[in-house]
Image 1 (tube, helix red, strand yellow):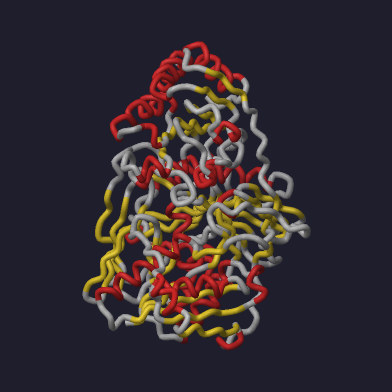
Image 2 (cartoon, chains in turn blue, yellow; image 1 turned 180 degrees about the horizontal axis):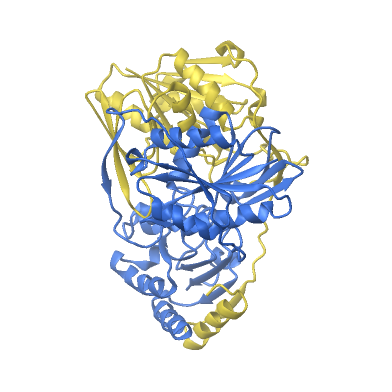
Length: 326
Length: 258
């Protein structure tokens, strides 16, 4: 019988919301077939995370708790995850297309000869046949990938693509401790972790994003977007033009040579809508454009738009949303 | 030292993508093919090392169909010493793992000391091949590298993670480094470079020349489709509180996103 294994990421002893999204999708995919859903937790001193797993209705939780896993390391995490695969042989692995997921799973796939689909946005299980939809050509085209029968499929999913799952049941999952002997590495080491300047969620995981183009005119002017972002719980992004002009760091860039984002709401301030920018945000569920130029291409790709000055509109929007949410 | 750079030939970033009649591929006719932009950062980095140390040899590798050779010629014009083109008409059906198996075999055969690649190709956007090559070679890897320093047999590679956070990794030179934007500014091929490239060695080999049997992909692309582009296009004119409130109302009641 087919089974699904979900890779659970956690931060500060809490399960990430992107992983909860995958747990829900795994349960939804198996509700007709009665297949098992299990989860994998890797890390060091993860007992709180394992305890929290009781909220998500899975049968088993495979845990590898080891000091070598305190920080992400590709080779240790690959080894630990492959040890779990050795025990459980799932037909489908769901993971998040996060910085860690993107880095880790190709290595797991190559070691275990699996089939990996990156950036999955839709999954169909049809009599054991797995089909996964994913964007290609920077979202200018979608493709359905079919997994060869009998091969374990590993799908790293875009955050925010699956509907919220409302019927999680509290269970007492069986906890399986996985023992792994880790190599001691002296040549391949992380020397330094440099924290980002912001404690906002990463853009690729944000469910709301506000972003600005070159007409923001100055790095300090991002404060008007920050205020709106604070009210909306949003991430703040920028177009390539704004990054190239030095108003924002590359880590904020959305588009073909920046981040590809998939929020429920994307609000573009003073962004004209070059094809390279659209490549990074066109799958957003709802797009709002604010621009002084009525002819700006972004309006054709927007659900809602206001023709007007972003410096006037942003504060009004902040006030209006604040009033609504209060 | 021999640096291997894997470059992929892809439709340029502004190409209009159309789905072929059988839905198994895109229409390639009329598209301009270029070196995938992230691979250009990898090539430029190798050429910067070569600028400092003339004993370094830079070899560019492409696994591709008929279009791939032209972009390898561009790599030679930018300054690569040699190129290896692994020609395969069925490359279109290769998944990331097949590509990595073929490239790692070719890199091994050339006794490459360092592998530089882009973080992902901008056509299939997989971002898998670098890590898979590393696994096949049993080498360390660092992906999404925006800063790279080579000194006395090691690399210090700065990897961009989430929310502007970074990690600095130390790896031996025998590693796979997957490059991203910010690493450098790729050079243009000069006229002199373009002339010189015509005389440089470009080996064309097949998968079986590498001693590999035909590898069955684990993934088959069965259907391409264009994304739905329908948007509501509701517009307001003028920066007024009334318009802003109307927008917020729509976001709340119609779109249900706030």
